[in-house]
Length: 348
Image (cartoon, rainbow, N blue to C red; front, side):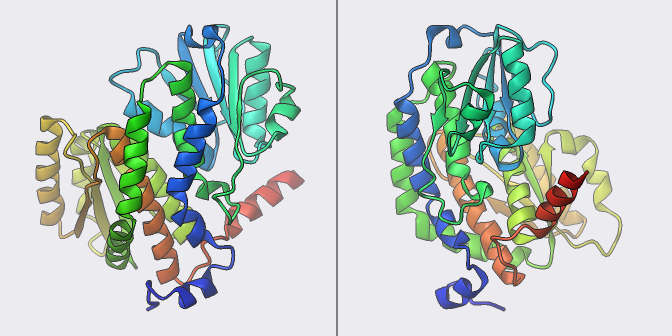
């Protein structure tokens, strides 16, 4: 088994430097928060009735996090649009956020054209000007960031940009409220705790190795479960899934019995900020999982605010998926089957 603390061994498996991109997550967050503060949005962008966030893969992560983080405070609905079309209700009272790291995602471009035709309020976030040019929206407010803290170049490793960028845009428009001091304190805390988070990720990766991780999460961390599932799939080339509490208590527990040779490992994403009812459910759910002879792991992110715990968990999850890829002897920078699919689809 590879020594996960030996950088010479790691470099052999990581020619595209995914490790450094993972290390720079906090720098991505700090950069994008500052970048968005320099954007001015028209007043009418605050006077909307719904938000539609368009993105695929890693570029959809921000929407997934936003839906759950602001569920109890955002007074208008947020919809995640992950295909070519838009909901019929999108119109002049809608805010459509186009998220495409590359700036050329076909589904996002298609949705963007529809949004413009419906006269929706449109904004965007991308790592270059391609999206604005292809849609001819240079005159509309958007965020073009320099991905200098993602040296491997893979959009899925730019989670700080895509996730905190989407949050920052809604914050700048005035639809949500997060104080600058909270973000800065969280960034400072993550920098101080980086080595501890890495050590925990190594410990968890070794326990998950050769197993099938099933992620259980609830309330404001449900978006994190989605992101972590995808990170394990793409970076570690390992199957993973996630389920949400309390819904899983109504069906999934009966599915833990068979088959008897299952290799499941349940990873609970817990929080001291969960509601009391949810905490009770987690305790009892862990008991049921153990009674079905399935190993249980639990990660509880640190931080006083929900956004702080979300960012802690994103940092941890990036390392966890990365270390799992090394244990499997995989190059974390490659996504051969995704690339194959895109190539074959383009031929049709």
